Length: 305
Image (cartoon, rainbow, N blue to C red):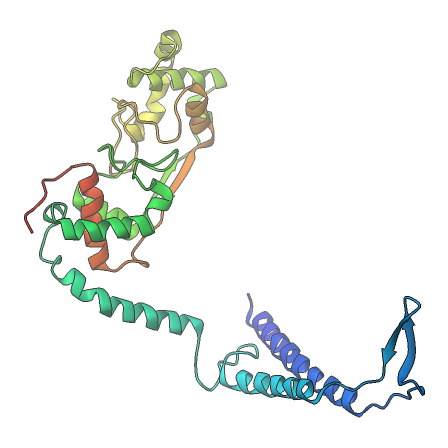
């Protein structure tokens, strides 16, 4: 957005807000000073539905005072807080600033809880019951929405309990994943593989790597074309954790299995993103969460407390 457009909308919002408040005051003044010529029966002559008449009665005083207080309050509020476009208010308050202050206060409050965990490795923490109780709550609040409350995932969301890791399952790799996030991209390779029949043949060869039911004739024909895929998945199909390329031989299918799912992946590609948690969790929280996630697929012995 250009500076001119930004300034225009700022002035537009400020002007519209101020005019609205002043219009309320003007309307209140007009309604209080305008005299309506009433009939002898104190009606204005306006009739609806044959028998519904408008009476010429002024607003109750308390109602008028509420209107006046509302207008004054709006003007005072507009001076103190951000109300008129880019104007920040004399108090300098902002929702972002208040949120950050609350986050900082929360971090100070929880710091003592994590202090005893800082000197322990993720492997040690994974066997520490109090640490894992904290890790479980971190997981439920930040990870369960995608990976499930039981951490077994769903289609396109990895199972964290099976020991199959796209980017590596050691604590250092898990911590990097949590901190920085991951973006797994498989480009569309249909054109590089060849004809639609070639793609189907490669799909059956991929299924054969994990002994999944397949057409052996098509698999044999697709073997040579698999070279296009081998650049990431390896000639043996066992994947590459440096690239986040999955192992095609273990029978674990993150995005669905079978000819249709695999041909769709080859033709259309896949873009799967794990968001970074560094903006939501501090380093101490990520350290404990790393231990919890690692422990789900390694089952460490519980440590004495």
